[in-house]
Amino acid sequence: MLKARIFVELKPSVLDPQGKAVTNSLNTLGYNQVADTRISKYIEILFSEGSEDEVNRQVEEICNKLLANPNTEHYHYTIEQAEYS
Amino acid sequence: MRVSVITFPGSNCDHDAYEVFASKGHQAELIWHKDTDLKNPDLVVLPGGFSYGDYLRCGALARFSPIVSEVLKHATRGGMIIGICNGFQILTETGLLPGSLIMNIGLKFICQNQYIRVESSNSPYTFNIETGTPLMIPIAHKEGNFYIDMAGLNKLQDEDRIIFRYCNAFGGIDEQSNPNGSIDNIAGICSTNRRVLGMMPHPERSVTESVPGSDGAMIFAALEEYLTAFS
View 1 (cartoon, each protein chain N blue to C red):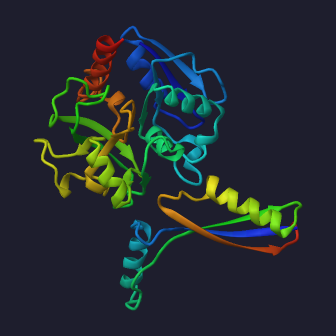
View 2 (cartoon, chains in turn purple, cyan; view 1 turned 90 degrees about the vertical axis):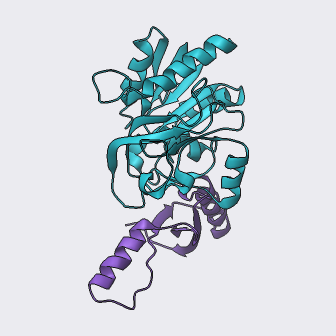
């Protein structure tokens, strides 16, 4: 089986209020070297069948159609062999 | 007026919206998101709430409900659609309106009465309401921070498509009166043909005398006047 590991991230130009709040908290904890934090989504999809090329094509489509909003987000992913558990 | 209010799993302002029209004698229908018949309405309402639990992104999953294909056809025919709060989020996710609603800058869910200023009377929803009029209308959202890139913002400004902006009680636009960080204080925008409106504030919650304000009624009255004038 193939597993896609997909990251959906806010574009650098889009403000991430959650990331900003986490940066503030980390600075308060004494991590003064922390300059910025960005919070992203991580999504795993398991495919029951299909070649790597076919899965690649589908993941691309899935990201464009649903997982990422092109106005505010971009995505990247890797595809690897996996066992269904 | 024939009005179809769509109920998605998680919608919670559908009955309020229905009541606004039904109580004034309009032919209102509640339509389940799995239906495929819009019932030939003059106006479609995409109500507020948390469709599909706001999973993935607000409005992202509602876009694939069966009725939404019919809503898109209605828009293509030049039909009127108002998306309120979650409805606005759905309209941006379907691409009927540009931009996105992202998390409020302060990270908090905000529920309060809020002034918004009518920026253009050139829409069915603000017909005959003088530009610059401040309206007090409640907001209740966590993802209402309107974002669009600069090219998109310039286009909205140039085409006079910003219909409402957050303001103070006197109609002044400043940072203090912007509750959620929306770019250019934007609270509501319309489509190129001006018939699709998305707005974060809830006019359907400020219609009757039983709540602190009734400015929302002006938007529904504007719609009635518009339809009387042009149908």
